Amino acid sequence: MCSYPSQNQGAALLLVLMIAAAMASIMIYMSEKGSNSARMANLVKQHSRAKMLVDSAQAELINELMTTSLGILGPNGSYNGIKPENPSVTNFIGEPTKRDQLEIVVQDASGLVSVSPMNDKGFETLLRYNGVSSDDVTRIKDRLDDWQDADGLRRIEGAEKGDYSQAYLPTNTDIQMVEEFRYILENDHLYEQIKPFLLVGSYPYIVRQFTPKSLYSAFGFEGKVSEQNSGEGLENPLSSGKLLIQISHNEAVAYSKQFIFERGAGLRPYFISNEQIVD
Image 1 (tube, rainbow, N blue to C red):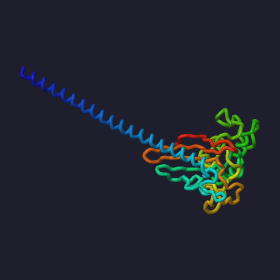
Image 2: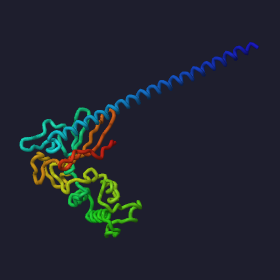
Image 3: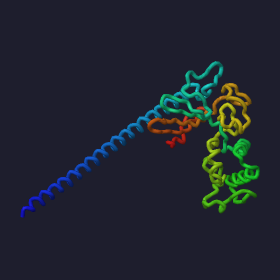
Image 4: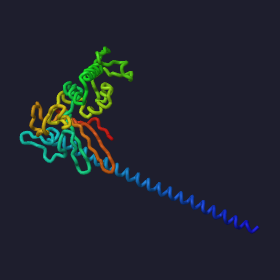
């Protein structure tokens, strides 16, 4: 009979220990949950701040391009003694400009290879520079022609409906997006190599002073970029008015926005297109 109190005390002690363990687990869980919530709140705050900085820089750059000579002459150009004063970017050839916590990249469209209208010579030069053989160049040209013409007649090395895994291809219209070349080339590696240098709606020829330095070897341009007002071998030394712009915040939180700024013809206003958040 004396054993009953001892057993009851043991059971009570075990119950107390179980309750203490459960409470400790709850406290640990709540503490971790609080820490995670705090970290998440901090990330949201940092992301919002990064977005605000990028949006603010975009608005300031657009205003500068619209109200100063920067959008016409480029950062290094001049005309009749007029030149941009303290431009916020240093070049229009796709090289980054550091601005406080941001990085701004501006590429003038005239320095890239146009695929609509097609810069045939520039496109072929770009293919050969990236190791494409003469036979493959011919094949790509035939596929490109079949992709755009309205008839269903296949060229010798071309491709028409039924030759693509997608039943709706080819489009049989002019090139609308650079991404179409992924199907035309049938070579993802080659596509990724040349994609940064292709553009729809650019000049039908390459303008040297706005060409990225990475293309100098491909097109036989020697030496460093000349002053952008030199017009060496060019009909028009001024900016094309169509700029590919990316503004990036790459510190604690990465946030990048990409868009095209374009100057309208004649009295047409400036406008923004293809605005998107990029990885």
